[in-house]
Amino acid sequence: MFEWQGNADHPEFDLALAKTYVGKTILIGVSYLDHTGKPLEQVQMHGVIESVGPEGINVSLRGKRAGESWMMPPTLESLTPAKPGVYKLHSTGEEIHDPDLLTTWSVKRPLQH
Image (cartoon, rainbow, N blue to C red):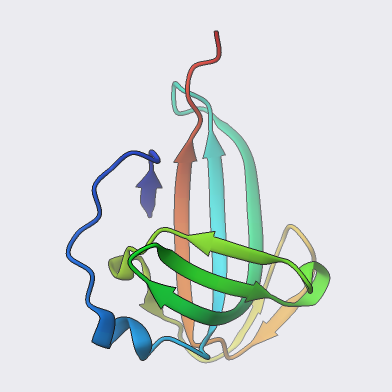
């Protein structure tokens, strides 16, 4: 799981590798945490990678979130191949058949004053 703090430097971006992900289906899991690391919310979504670049990976969402997009950080190391099969999104009840990629993220919210 990757933790995004919003201000971290990104590793060197491999554009040739990134381009191979365009058009792939992806399952995304995001855990939102408070400033101490306590879980606040978990979100699951799926879609198709539309574009990639050093600014981020843009996913066109499908299913219950069709018409929305989600931009994730350009961290290619967060993408892992998915094993063939049916994946059920617990947050929506949707079933996704044979996605290409998986990614999970942990997003820590800053301390509110």
